[in-house]
Image (cartoon, rainbow over all chains, first blue to last red; front, side):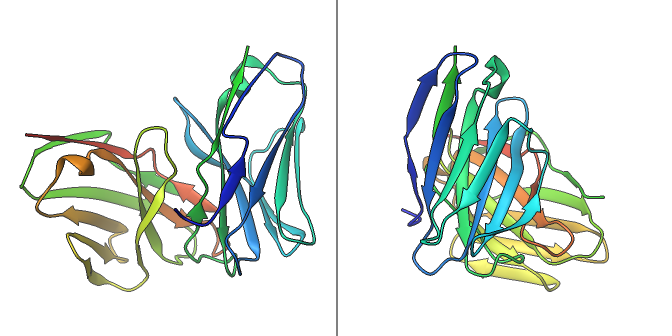
Length: 113
Length: 110
């Protein structure tokens, strides 16, 4: 158990819908990261927050957005869902957010039908 | 830019030793990570190398050569539970974003 929690564990929804994934970092970690993992793509970085501020952005679609709240939990919002958005979404956290080891949550498996 | 290469698959026998290689190209090196990921589960941190040489941690060791852009993960006394994907990753531009290789799927056979 890494200490990072994610909810929900599974999510099944229809195309065109919007969902919110939630992540709580390990106690003491200020930085949160979101990654997408699909079968043919491997782990792809989406976005990073550090103490409430966006720090780095990957190839995150405009339909996706995220934020980190004052209590350091983070939410990833996915809208206008498409079949290709079906994937495992992982949240990770680290203390400093600059090249230190990241600890991953159990992931949310999103299935878009 | 960043580029990471790992073999796609490897097979080894229970009790044996296996070496998983990773080559990388990065602008501004800030260390290299190895993660283990069982199917459908979260990646778990195995090791971090920032200086050249071998870091040993129980049955797992990781080696780095910065001049060659090369690392390997060495797994000894293989167990069936070591069957998993092994991911090599480097931070992007010395920041927090990790660039992952595609992973090496290791199958341990009895």
